[in-house]
Image (cartoon, rainbow, N blue to C red; front, side):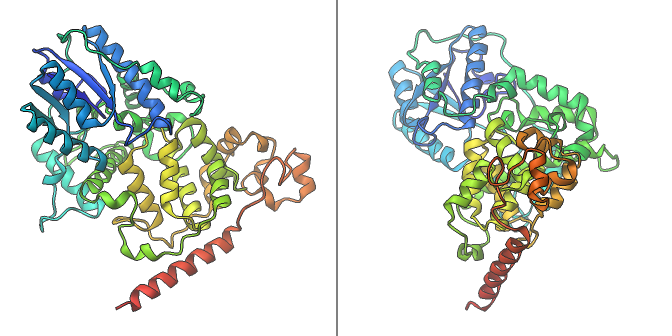
Length: 482
C-alpha cells in the first residue's frame, strides 16, 4: 500500500499509516512544483525540508524508506502505483483549494487504472461538510461556529487517537529523489538564522508541546501578546505540517482540564488557547467552503476599495523601514525568524492596510513567503479579519495606533531593541516615536534619521484620516448603489 504524506508528517495518530501497518508500506511524499515551486523558496519550504528529513529518519528506524518524488501530484502517484503493482493508495483529505484539486485528479486517475484508494480525515477535529447552521449553510461567524464545535466535542467526544507503528514492512528498493538536492535549490534563499530558532520534526515538536503545557499554557491569556518566546506555544508550523495532531492536543488538554464541562471553569489561559485552536479550525472551514477567500474579499463592497499601488512604500513595510519602531521590529523579526507574535501581526497588518492603504492581499502574500507555518487558511482569514473585509472581521474603522500599541505591548522597549539594534541606545522616552525628539538629541544616542534609521513614511494621524475618508466614501457609494 502507498501511504501518501502531505501535511501529516508524523507517525503518531496517523490513521492512514496505522491501518497499513500489517502489510507492505510505501511512504510517499510528492513535491508538486505547480503549487509551490522550489525556484521561489519560502520559509515554510525550509521547514518542510527539515520535517521531511526528520520523518525520513523515523521511517528508517522502522525499517522502511520514505520515497520522495517530484512532479504533477496525481500523475506522479498514479504512475508509481501502476509501475510497481500497488493496488491501494491511502491519504488524508486535502482542505486547501490546491489540495482538493489534487485529490480530485488523483481519485480520477486511480479509478481509471483500477487502483483502490481510501481517504482519511485531515488534521482537524470535524468533517467540515457536516458542520452547518440550522439553515444547512456554512457558518460565517466564529462565535456560533465555536459554540457548535464545543457542543459536538462535548456530545461525541474527541476523535480517538491511534498509536505510532513500532515496525513496518517495506516494498523493496524504489527509486527516490534525494532530499539533499531539494535543499540545494533553496540555498541562501531563506534566512540562514531559521535553524537557530526552530527544530522541525515530530519528536522535537512533541517536546515543545509538552514543555508549553507544563510551563506556559495557563499564562497564555496574559502573556500571548508579549514578545518573549516562552509566551507562545510556537506550534503553528507543527500543526500546519501535521507534525502533531490536533486530536492529540485536545486529548492532552482534556486530561488536565474540564474543557467540555459547562459546570466547571478552566484557567483563562487554557480557554484562550482552546479558542485559538478553534480559530485555526474556523479558518480552514471557511477556506474549505469559500476557496476564493485567498484573493477576494468576503465583503463584496471592498472589491471597489481604492487601494494604493505604491511599490516603494510596500517595500519599506516589507523590509522594516517604515520609521515606526514597533512595525519595523515586527517585520524584521518576520524576515529573520519566520514568526512574529499575534499582537505584532495585528499591528503590522493594520499599518499596511489602513495607514498605508495597501491591499491586504499584498500583506498575505508576503506573510506566506516568510512565515514558517504559512498556513493558507489562517493567513487569508486573519488578514481579512484585520482588514475589515472578511465574513467575521474587525471593523475597518478600528485603526490601530502604532505608537500607543508600542507603549502598551512593549512598555520596556525590549522587543524593539532586540530587533532594531540601531535604536538600542535610545532612552525609553524616545524609543516608541523617535521623530518627536530634536535631531541633535537623537544624534547624541547614535540615531541619525534618514541615515541609520528611516524617517516616517507616513504620519499616522493623516493616514488615519485618509483611510476613514476612503472607507466612508465606499460605504456611501454602496448605500446608494441600485
